[in-house]
Length: 114
Length: 110
Image (cartoon, rainbow over all chains, first blue to last red):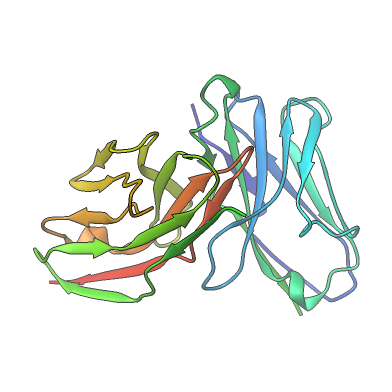
């Protein structure tokens, strides 16, 4: 069990560019979550998947954000036309439905929009 | 809606001091409650949890008791170490996701 991994760990981009992040959950986990954490704040929920189905999206997930989990394994989070306000740490977590209380977090991708 | 209010930091303690970090919650029903810890440069790690009223979660010398009467889940440790320096987050389980507090940064000095 290698844990949840995220790539890249850091991303610096210019305003208006598109970025994509990847999350690889723990292999037997069928639920995958995305959170966003800004400086001095706790993580805020963005969206979650059960297998390949995206079952919930928060109001924080504007139409510039899209997440996919095409084969029920890894997931990608894309931000189009980035804005400076998108600068944050993007966290991925996974859990097993049978024990959904235990969410395991990855190290995060830190996005800086200049 | 569901929310967590956490003691603001930062907190600085000397080694072997007693630690309390306050956490109160607002929720419908009785959600499961958690403390997560984030060490420098690392991801969030589950520290302890409690799933029902009066449950006590414990791990690594840390404890927290689920108090329904006061809607609280305060984190305590009797004797902190330098290695406990980290950011601590209180969280509650929503329908499908976790609701986190703002985090409390703890620094333990030798």
